[in-house]
View 1 (cartoon, one colour):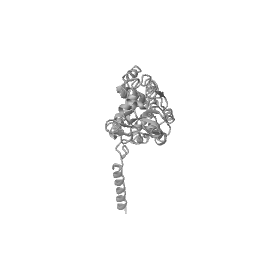
View 2 (view 1 turned 180 degrees about the horizontal axis):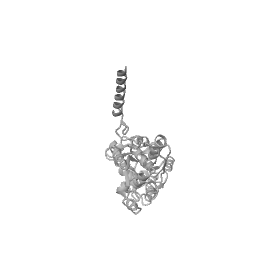
View 3 (view 1 turned 30 degrees about the vertical axis):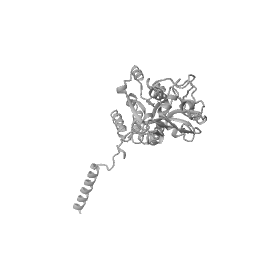
View 4 (view 1 turned 135 degrees about the horizontal axis):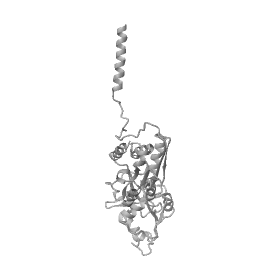
Length: 334
């Protein structure tokens, strides 16, 4: 009997030893897509302050909501939408932890960071979080301008291109279109979308003097939906959530009209001519000093962040390898 008890005891000890050394059947550091997950071993608290792009706002707000609900319930992530340029004005002196932008940071802004003791190359991480398609929208009752060439769209916004008083009519674009004055709209100078349109697409040419530039995208939607002769430009996401009120113009970039969609928006896809990356910038000094900032930044590039939520907010997600490269940089901090 003593021999049996001894044998059983040894067997149990051996089983426990093997079980403790055996590898886990799952990998807690990666999700099914191979992206590193953002799993914090401790509960965090405090705040994460974000401001910037109104275009990026719906995506970042959704990421923040999911993070606070499912990851760190005691962390308060505040997301503003002052506009890309306005956001950088807060980020440069260190008033925010992350800065969303629908255009890349400018050289003069990098110089201003240096003046504030922040070296862009080492103290800031530029994260390209998704791709957006600049979308031209018209009123639902506009039945004639549902398809336009890229040049027609850009030329109509250029000052004095058609008329000295800038009171451009639809018939100036195509002779068989109505002889009604076009009401031009767009986001104001605080927004990266304005800068992308004006500086990149229009090559900094003056816009028509009649253009009405607004701070709020919801205002632009209302203006276009209430004016049969209106046209405006903004990010694809705001069109997606307002398809019942406005129509997106199909753009011909040279190979036939292309409708903006998650299937066409991309740097090598049919809507490439109006595709642009959108960003968030992380203050790495803040991330090193405040665990909640680093944890949230990791969540943004994890499999639960932009990779999963971009499409639902009107953005085309990037290849998984891009997000993984950002995760590796953040993990090197702590």
